Length: 292
Ligand code: ADP
Image (cartoon, rainbow, N blue to C red; front, top):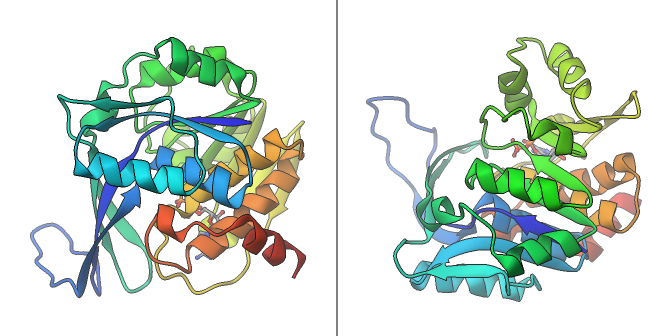
């Protein structure tokens, strides 16, 4: 089983021709609200695309956005007994602009996610019971470190970009980052350089490269996993879906390269659909993409 410790946000997505720069005003062609947040997208990805038995540890507001997020999670088959509802904080939200090329620009308001500063007994039990625990950095770092300490196997998606405390590194079994995060974490200008430095700090590493797929470093062996060429309409949540599926496949006993192939196939399907959690493909779709 997989336990995801992370964030949930209600996304408001604006479609624009081009993402505006500082001081610029552009007109949107549409506005849509849909479930998101890295943690929730990962939990939905692990359950729906990865076929895993998934529990989610998170904090939502006691508001309509929280109700919508909870419905999305349960609809995808995610166990929500360790999801807190807070009366004194709004659910997290994200304002997202998506350009014609599918690229995005995102501002997150943490809301209830920022209140997940500790783990209660039930939440810790959900972490300790899982074969694989997956966490992201849209929640307080202290909780990420706590989950890492309790986990049998800990997968860290170090996103969004934040420096990692020294006491977290030794607990990371698999580090998953995109190209930007790899550079930010190491200060290396060159991607190959960033990969080498990160590979020296964790047991295993996966760097996702968007349309170029991903690179895996495990047991000192570097493997390139290509992605399927597709037309991206909205890349929001593709990396999250990738992480969720990767965690699910690791929990099922796959090796890291095989799990990365599954994650990559799921990510390539997710970018072809609008939304984050709503763009998550089914397990059958991912399996079919892998054999075609
Ligand atoms: P993030 O969304 O965190 O920046 P990436 O952009 O690297 O992460 O995407 C994660 C994964 O999703 C990639 O490894 C790849 O498998 C898939 N993916 C993302 N963008 C594309 C694309 N344009 N075409 C095909 N696959 C994609």
